[in-house]
Amino acid sequence: MIGPIADLGAGVLSKLVRMGEALLMLLQAIAVKPKTSSLPRLIQQLYVVGVQSLIIMLVSALFIGMVLGLQGYTLLAAYGSEQAVGQMVALTLVRELSPVVAALLFAGRAGSALTAEIGLMKATEQLSSLEMFGIDPLHRIIAPRFWAGIISLPLLVAIFSLVGIYGGHLVAVDWLGVHSGSYWGNMQQAVDFNEDVLNGMIKALVFAFLISWTALYQGYSCVPTSQGISAATTRTVVYSSLAILGFDFILTALMFGGAV
Amino acid sequence: MATDDIINIQNVSFYRGDRAIFKNLNCTIETGKITAIMGPSGSGKTTLLRLIGGLLQPDEGRILLFGQDIAQLNRKQLNQLRARMGVLFQSGALFTDLSVFENVAFPLREHMNLSADDLYNRVLLKLEAVGLRGTRDLMPSQLSGGMARRVALARAVAMEPELILYDEPFAGQDPIAMAVLQRLIKHLNVQMHLTSVLVSHDIAEACAISDQVILLGDGRVLAQDSPAALQASDDPAVKQFIHGEADGVIPFHFPAPPLQQELRGQSE
Image (cartoon, rainbow over all chains, first blue to last red; front, side):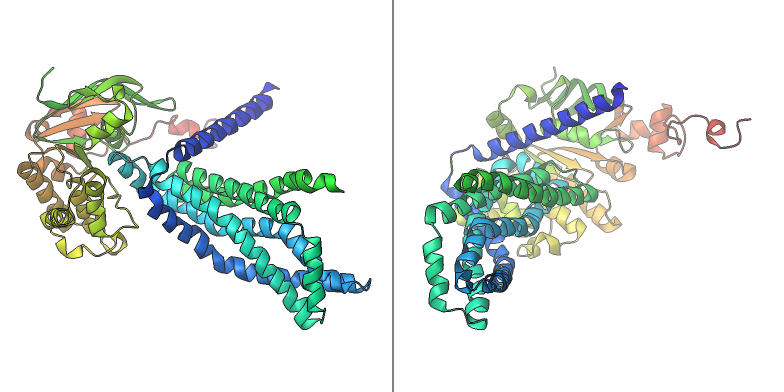
């Protein structure tokens, strides 16, 4: 009778312990005074995490913008208001699709790579080796990767929106013949910087935090075998994707829920 | 307490979950000697090495390193102690994003303020000592297993430590690489006045170069003696391990109920 309840309790407790560990890891890694000597490592990670994710972001953003332009045009043309397609594309991207899709791609592209890299460093004893040289792997390995994630994702989201809007322009204006002036004009009128752009950026920042934290903790705490690393990499993608979608709803409710 | 013991392990117990890896382990390692820690797989050899390096903490007892209890040290003091020892990990543990030269230079850049020329010369001399000066511009992924281990050895001695710990230096090496590593361990011990501790289950290779052998089994020290004395030992457990017998005090079978009970359709 009591068995399943006890199992549930033990399961919840072990999850709580893991979350506590994850929080401690993060605090130990980032609660240090920044040093100028660690700047090159941050720049290198910005390149790996950010610049190398650029291609997948650009291509996805272009196609998503084009789909939005096409769908928006067909829908709006039925009511004779196809000139509003610009504001539809821009608002959809800036408020929702850019942060969410870019974050999901980032979790798959950069998050999984971070977990696998750190897991392999653990398996090949590189982390122990650093420790024996008197260097804290949390400061040397975890911290620059964490900050690189926090800095890159919001920038990638901004680029995503920009390219997506041009993608929408390509279909709606250049192909389907919406007037270019009304595409941009309606967009300028409808999109508010604080309400839409800034809120989208806040989402990006929250997602960046969730992905980096999940990916780094999964790598740092994984069982250092090939199975352990593959399981940790899967967990990174699954957990961060779920966290992104869950938090997106909460954030949307907080930001736009009252405006109706 | 004898002052010429560089490592002194006193009543150490260490648990993984409920399983005791060590129970009341006592042993000492003498300065200037090559000591081999041997024992069957799973007897905790590597764990002992990690305890000595301060990477793990014992649950009971204490470990004195250079006469200091490592559990009592703060992080900075522990790191100062670590600067006096080098570790050769089983996998070599070279940093995969740095070249051979930068790997050997790594501890020097972190801990010493050398001029560019001094650093360059020192790294080159260390690589020369392991016979791999020619590989300085290669990346670790371009090295064979034996070469990677030699580069890791050059890196471990780059800071000119007093103590060096080798984790399974011979595992998975071909006969030539094994002979090279044996020669290097012996040479470095004499040339640099090191104390060497090597963990191994390659009996012949380890016995050939060590002055003293500590045989672990069952969470305790089964024997601590010179290789020759161990070869001649009458202790059944020592004999079984040293002469590589499949069955004996350390059983061939993993503990299980009697076979008759486990076979189906046999109990009636």
